[in-house]
Every structure is written in C-alpha cells, then in structure tokens.
Image (cartoon, rainbow, N blue to C red; front, top):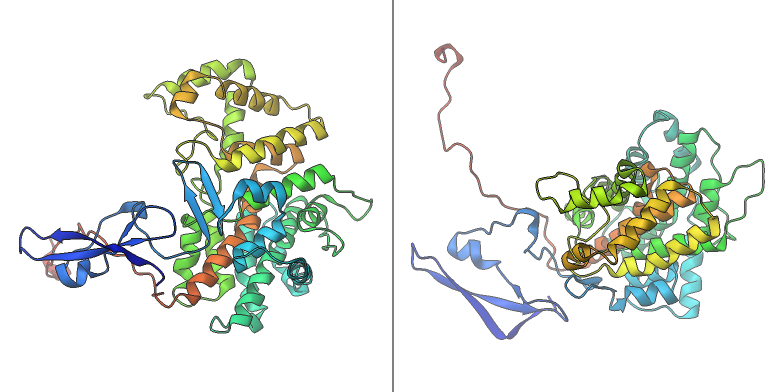
Length: 436
C-alpha cells in the first residue's frame, strides 16, 4: 500500500465496556482528507463500523480520479476536467484513465487504432437483439448484450493475464457505442449501421445512431464535439454506485464483461444514471416557462414533494465543474440546430432564473451536468430512454480502469461488507403440528 501513516498519527479508540483500546493509523493520500485505517477494529475489539451508503468509508486505494466536492474540483489522474474538456478529446482521456499519463503522439495514434479495430461486434451477437421485445428499455438490452460478450471473447477473460485484461478493456470501450447504437436502431425497427473506421469515436457513434442506408448522413462537427465533451465529462467519477458495483463484482474474480454488465445494471437506477432523464420529466411537468415561478415556489416549500431536478449535486457542494464546461456546449448545440422546442426554451429560462435568484444562489443550487446533458441529448434527437445508455458508453472507460486497478492491487480481497443485525435472536424450530 502506497499510503503511509501521516507523521505516525493515530486515532485511539477505547471500548468503555471492556476497557480495551487500540491505536488506528491515520493514512494520508496525495490530496484529500486523512483516512482512518480501521482494519484492526474487528480483530482486536470485536467491533464493526456502521456506515449506510459507505459515505464515510474508503473501500479501496485508487490513483485514478479525485473529487473535492467543496471546491468543485474533478481530476482524472491529476488533470483538471476543465482542461481535458477544453484541450483534449475522449480517446486521449481514455488513455489517461487507463495508463495514468498523457500519451505521446505515437502512443495516442496506436491506442486510437487499437480501439478502432475493435468497434465491430461478432455477427452472431446481432441475433441476440431479436430475442428482446422491440419496446424493451434500452438499458435492459444493454445489460443482456454486454453480459453476453463473455460468451464470444474467451481469449480475453483470463483476469490473471495483463495482456488479456487490456484487450478486454479495449474491446469494451470500442464495442459499447456500437452496441448502444444497435439498441437504438432495434427499437426503431431500422437496420443496424456498421462502424466506420474513418470517423472519430463520438462522430462514429452519432453516425451509427442516426444514419440510414438509403441516404448519406454527415455528422455535424458541433454535435460531434458536444458528444465528445459529454463522454469526457462522464468518463469516471471516483467510487460511485456503478463503479463500486464493478469493483465488487470483479473482486470475486468475475470476467470483465460480466463486471461491466453489473455496472450497467447499477447505472440504470434513477438515482444514479437516470438523473438527466429526470430533468426532462421535470421540464415536461412544468410544461411552460410561464409556470416556472409556480414550481420554484413549490421547490422552496419543504412540505411539497416537488424537486427541481438538475440543480445542485450530492458530491459538489459549490458547483459542478462539469456543468460549466457543458453549459457552453449546450448553447452551441441549440444555436447550431435552431431547435424550436418549448421544452428547451423552458430549460433556458429556468437556467437564467437559477443563476440570479437569491434562493438558488444561497442554497448553491446551480445547474449541474445532468441539466445540460439532458438538454443537449434531447436537442440532438435522442429519446430520454437512451440517456443512460450514453452515460454507459462514457463510463465504460472509468469502469475498466478501476477494474484493472483493483485486479493489480496486492491488498485486494473479495468484497464482503458487514452488517448491523437487528433480526430475531436464536430460536428453536417448532414442528408444524404444534404451531396451532
């Protein structure tokens, strides 16, 4: 473990019943709060900790992503998200997350080539889609198809082989947009569009999603750029629910395709990946920009169940650094498309109000990344059911980076959370004839 006790600092815990006490080391990362090493708490004091949601528990050591919610900072391998979104692209961000450093020109070219060569899926895999109802939720299809990849790529499921792990990582990053586009096409009853090696990652995804065989489709550079930024901003976000799910599944030795399918299932939850979809549903509930004051008033009322979705963030207590980046892209997309949509006009009015209203400012309820990504994706023509699928495309690189890091961690153990048991104490079985 790279962490060292900070100046030999310890936290002493005493059991007032037995009088026994232990000194637990305080560990220091490169940045962030100190961490109490509680590993001896059970073995020496016979106690567990109780932390629902693990909000105060460090489950692993990681070098990949750092978040400071109070300052509104997000780093990939130390690089600020604003710089990557402004100067980098998604493929380069993937390289950084996977390998830890900025690539040289040659390294980037080689990496992009490796991803490009893996974008097609096995032809037999396309038959899986016919087994789903056409109106199935896209995330249900994604869970099934991605999990099925392990049945097709046996040559990259040996997790003890670093080369196989990296091939599996490349395959997942490359095939996820292809599978996502196929999922969308299947729901429409349109033929699948094969990937084109001449196109960039985001551009290729948009082409597979919106092109049809009977006419030429040219991807707008503005939309491709916005899509690329959305992918960068969602690529990783520390130990969130889906990433923790991937790590927990992987801790058992499960193959990478099964682990990523587990991550997709976790992401499907409305409290996690469904937030930008919830923004659109909220806007539809408001209905018209003239009704905004009414709903803002409801949001201020603690007794009202209505919530303003897309404002504020559980982690970021000041502002979401990803939202600042996406705000500009959002306005560029709306200007490019010239969309005349009352719902989007409503969203822009709500944004304008939120940035100057005293209540929003005092509570730090700034528009977050889900607010802007939801607006962008709707303007591009994606149905809300596809929003979480696009999140999965972006987050796949974070999942595989975290999974690889976990596999290589010498301190890694199979995940086994403990519990505070509140059920019945021991009781004896009563024969059914004696139960009355």
